[in-house]
Amino acid sequence: MNSSKISIIDTHAHLDGEEFDSDRDAVIARAAEAGIGRIITCGTSVEASEKAIALAEKYPAVYAAVGIHPQEIAGVKKTEISRIATLAKHPRVVAIGEMGLDFHRSVVYKDEQIKGLKWQLELAGELQLPVILHNRQATNEMIEILSGWVQKATADSPGVIHCFQENADNARIFLNMGFYLAFGGYIGYPKSQMAEVIKIVPQDRLVVETDCPYLPPQKYRGQRNEPAYIKLTVEKMAEIRGTNIETMAKITSENAERLFKLK
Image 1 (tube, rainbow, N blue to C red):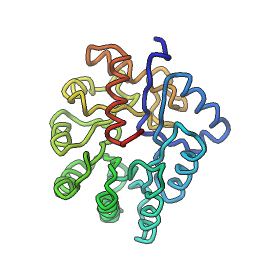
Image 2 (image 1 turned 90 degrees about the vertical axis):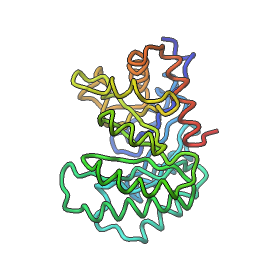
Image 3 (image 1 turned 90 degrees about the horizontal axis):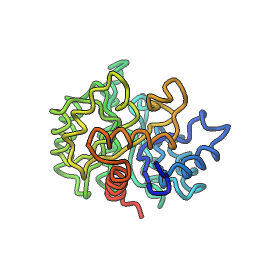
């Protein structure tokens, strides 16, 4: 594979993480060498969102998304949502997120998660920005909330379901609402059941992501993930869809450009 022939957009990274503190410049450089032309780094709290913007200001290839992750939402007050609203007006911000629902570990903060999600959805609608949604073991609640919200949202697309790992029926529900689906390195894991789902997603709704430093491709399991590794995900997706990596890189990048209005 000739990296000079491809340009991939990593639609979901966490470059603010302390895992990158010792070599962040090198990580960004390796991404460029591997053909990763642009990266969206996502905030998970007010502090992380501020760091995401700082990185987007420093690195021309990096854009920011700002939001509060469901696991960070406990105790959050509307003043913090107001801070996210202010950050969202920065010219390097292209989305609201990472936000959503996560009932995997605990449902103690279920009501707060739902309230935080609704606050951020309302903000995204006001600012006409797409959302980046985290959904883990909360699909029924997520579908109920989003089905009402998308009727009022007037953005070209409501956003993307991050780290999609659900069945084809749920994929169709989110697709019918207008969402894109994002897939990461886990699609190449031996126990992954995503191939059949990836096959049914319309070509114009596929995007790729690393979620780095988490969920590295199979080749790097147990190691820190980074944007340069996303080409392995694109390669696997191309294999599943019966095409080549150059075509899949072009498709997913054009989709990301359209979704996030990247220039």
